[in-house]
Image (cartoon, rainbow, N blue to C red; front, side, top):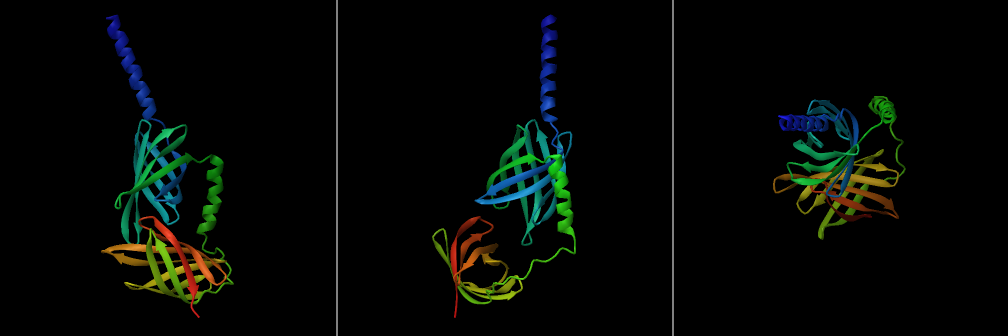
Length: 249
């Protein structure tokens, strides 16, 4: 009888310990840094934990989305849906809580592309400091940046290379203040572009169709001595390379 009683007590203690592990509260704001296919990104998520269920929101540069997730012992998972060029994508996070941090893998489910992430809980001071910044960003009367003194309007020959494959085009830029519009003509035809000029930095992007799937080509360069040089990326796959653009006379 004594052995049975000891066994029961040990079983109860084990169950209690497991319950304590699964009841670790993650409620609060978390800063998340992720890297997928060489592309780094930061976001902020606010978790609300009810028993083993997670709910809340994640805020990224493109807006705020709702999340759902689970806490199972030290394992933490959550996911949310975003829209990319009109296409739904699901971001899935699977991590382990250890020493106050959650680390693990993040996956873009529709493309099967994955990477790593690390999440750390924001302090009360950091959360308080972010509130006025968020309010300021949302204010409709926020001042626009001053017009750029750099003018890149005109025709440009763009030569690039991604993973050993040449990516060449002829682009016509129309600059209005700091905004770029126009077209880029490639082997498969013309595409409309949008972009920005910020000091000596010049960025633009356009969409193409590859075997029925939409892809976005993103150019980020610096103007120097009559040329724009920098990196070109296929956003959906995280594949990147270099490019140089030369103005046509």
